[in-house]
Image (cartoon, rainbow, N blue to C red; front, side):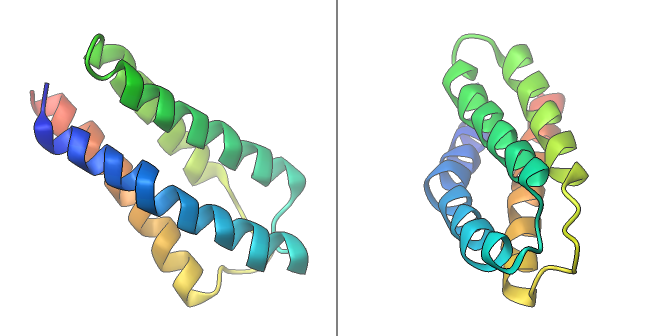
Length: 108
């Protein structure tokens, strides 16, 4: 198991997801910039990332599959207006971190 993947995923779960989740609720839902469907997609992606973290120790292939699925979900979120700059940066960093985990797992 790759320690770097564990570290990145922990940062995503402990830091990035709570920040983006707050953005989703504070900026986007209140302003009507994100749909309920996109919010559901966000929740599903978060569940898959957390599940991948738990499965990483026992089944790296399944964890990688969950991360791929979560990245597809994250990429499918389309706000009605562009994200504010700080929200876009946090959201893109989260997607980049998940993609980096997938890349590292593919090399292992």
